[in-house]
Length: 179
Image (cartoon, rainbow, N blue to C red; front, top):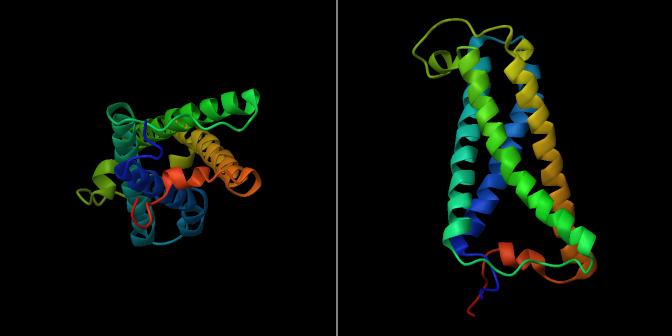
């Protein structure tokens, strides 16, 4: 049995963390700031958000494939059966929310006609009713769920690292030195 995650899983884990935070920051804060701006600023924000979202979906799909293809370290324990069950639930919910986020983003883009505009094949104006679209409501709600799960996951990792001092974070970090 392996003691830590495969290097490819570690890399993809941290790439997905950066991508989700980047996409969420643009979605939650940048869009409002550029709403009254010129088309170029709006397109830049949309392109960055959509590119990060697509990359995130791809990375999550790879992570899931590797999770099933590679040997995994044993499940971590907190010393409390209820917390251990919560950890399993949060991990599953993270994957489910990540996939739902990608699907709802795609639905939002398609339902509002964004792909040809964002990809530069159309000079049409950016639709003004994006925030009123039902798919936007769903996408935003899933975003809140996803970022909340990320926060819980991060707090749990910090709990293990600094309160339990069980070096759990080392399983999802880069190997140092020779082993």
